[in-house]
Length: 101
Image (cartoon, rainbow, N blue to C red):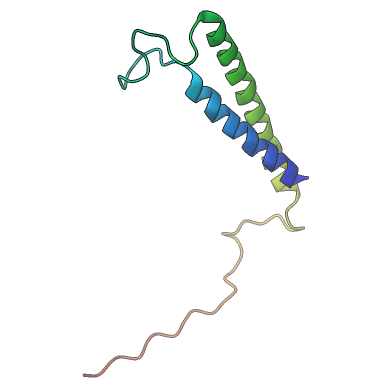
């Protein structure tokens, strides 16, 4: 089940990146994209669709993030301990012998 949610989460993330990259830059802070002649997507209606799509994808991304966090918390081992709390399992390595010249 967690794999299915993870795949959906990754698809939403890729779609969100794509939709954000399609939007026209309003500020022109980097000096690219804006210009005088419209871009790939121009017009007020297209801007509203992209803005609405971004909001929907961002909400879906947030929800899948929460679902993944809850599922990861519930699917752990019987003892809910931290990695920091567990003692080291292996013995430390012996110091190296000095090299004589």
